[in-house]
Length: 187
Image (cartoon, rainbow, N blue to C red; front, side, top):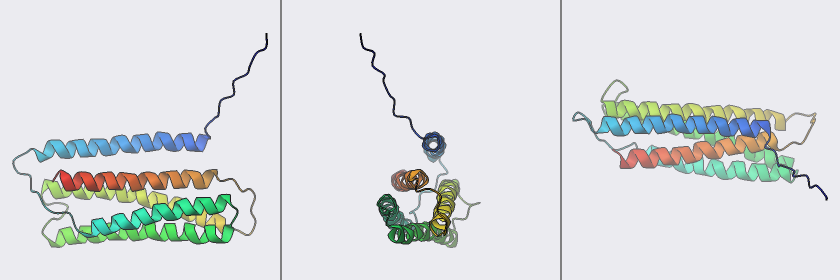
């Protein structure tokens, strides 16, 4: 009788940690949106339109998901020059996304909806603000990838760090789309 050994495909520890972190982040935003729904049913809730720049920022973050996808592809093909360009562009788009969100906050404030104003506005500041922090965390990871790409001495060509950064980046992209749709519908 011949015994067969079953080999499991193991997930890299960094990827596993990322999935745990994304699960935690998802639960946090589910908590935020659940609290939003509960609070919205109160009589003093003020409904208002989201700043239009939030929609523009959505196009920016969608484009950045495309650029990081292409960057990963170029890295795997060892086209390092193109990879460097795309990872740089992705980081720039991440900063542009955060800037658009900040502009949205200033528009809300100028329309009489400051952070300390109506509860509905406060929720937007907190939910979108926490998302911006997660995007900026992704920008930091992209900057690490950027500096690694421009090192003159390369030790390994492991795609794992870029795969982790790309997965996280796609995650914050999808999370933003969920938040924007949710906040647009549940006013």
